[in-house]
Length: 383
Image (cartoon, rainbow, N blue to C red; front, side, top):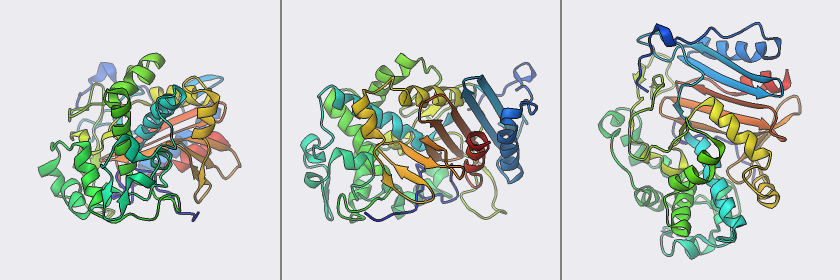
């Protein structure tokens, strides 16, 4: 199987997204100054500061380990008011949503309600057909590990024109059904034959969401809520459906729709998240993401067999490998962490945890044209 460069973002069209809310909070709720004196996290704080110096409007991170919880921030949540970012701020997490979706499907497998080696057509008959796509020879496992070859709908030129750049302001509140998004993909030929290569495709997870709905009789968002969010007490995490607003508290999200440093900055906070659906619609916080990934790696959400399946990876490049909605990353110091990255309009996020779930980092940048999570992760996990 060929090795491909990994780019874990919802969009697939904003190459600068590499991780990669509308409340105006008054002085009484101002964020405390980050504690730069904590030696164990001083390097992580410097990495957040550096991201802001490079152009990110605001950076936010939380670390949980055996010693407790550390929150770091830099820059601003709102470029107009100057309000700093708060540890409890909500933000769009983009493709981090995929780990939640994959966890639900693996739970269904553990319950004997689905087999990941079943074909897509056996669950969604006739849906994946056309231009060389054939759901009769694509498995559910291949959806989750991106070896299906199904075209990535966010690469469709017409979609890009509507969703990125000037088209965004006309179409930001449009509602997209999952079948609309799948239809965009099937208008193109597959990227490769199923199982012969690896290629990141948001279409895979739109289909995974439809599989969950077909098997359970309930929307994927309902299943994530009842199986993960409520049991873990993730009260700040939500699947917003068609609601374009951000829950409080939240800052603003910013995009240039360009890698040109001179391009104007746009406020893109409000958008209808059906444009991402099961591939990237979730809203969360750094604290909730750390709790989720820690619980997942500790075996609190999946039996051992399914967790092992999730961690069975396809090797990529630069130390990355991709499992079932879960990626591993071998850092330069040799430490391997597990998690996922996500990018969506004006928001770049990443979450990673040690294999035993005892040391976790989650972060968000409220801009999508610059910034990388690598420096923060290396600072925290490598010391």
